[in-house]
Amino acid sequence: MGATRIVNLAGKRGLIVGIANENSLAWGCAQRCHAAGAQLAVTWLNDKARPFVEPLAKQIDAPIALPLDVEQEGQLEAVFAAIARQWGRLDFLLHSIAFAPKDDLHGRVVDCSRAGFARAMDVSCHSLLRMTRLAEPLMRDGGSIVTLSYLGADEVIANYGMMGPVKAALESSVRYLAAELGPAGIRVNAVSPGPVATRAASGIAHFDALLDESARRAPLRRLIDLDDVGAICAFLCSDAAGAITGDTLLVDAGLHILN
Image 1 (cartoon, rainbow, N blue to C red):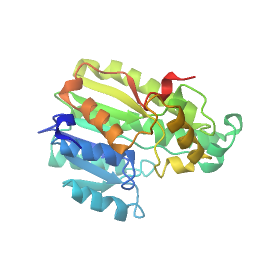
Image 2: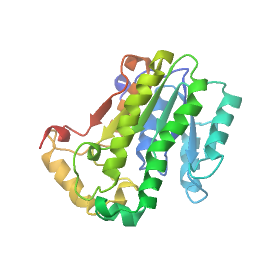
Image 3: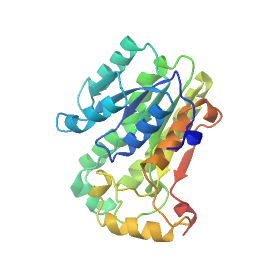
Image 4: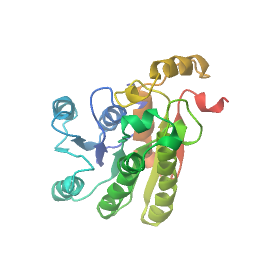
């Protein structure tokens, strides 16, 4: 992490949602934002995830670290209440959570269950709307909201299944949120990373083959890493990106330009 590559987030306070372990994209974002001077609040999904996330929270001196399962009533509100009580404001939010039931994810889109599709949409997309609604009153002087997507929102990616339509809905939501919150100085963007070996990605069938093929085909002839994603997310959270909103930025070593 070269100092010349770090944007300035000194004095800013942000919430990072979606750290599962040290291989999470959200952890790459947290490291970058912390290195840039931000004070961070972080969450873990449940008691099973806590032993993996809590030590990471200590590494970045996070003063707020709480459980957050968006499917559990009241947990999301409790996180934002803690932020309001301790900080009184929020400058940026990183949303990096997604879920689909395995049977629905591994099957054809046309065969996915109604309940599975609804659950995937709720956790992966509607949770962004809920977080934005709670963040808005804390971003009185403007702010930045960033979510993570994937190329499968725009193109048919083998084995990505129903998450393609779900991520497409997420990116569309980003545009609508950007339009609605822009007058308040709140920017909303998505970052679409190329394939990265995370725990979440391991649920995609034949993911190792996708990694190999991506590294072979990408114009830069490499895969991206957590730091690549963290760098662009930290930039979007900074004042340097003050004129960027409603966009989806692809960080994939150029893979998306190829058919």
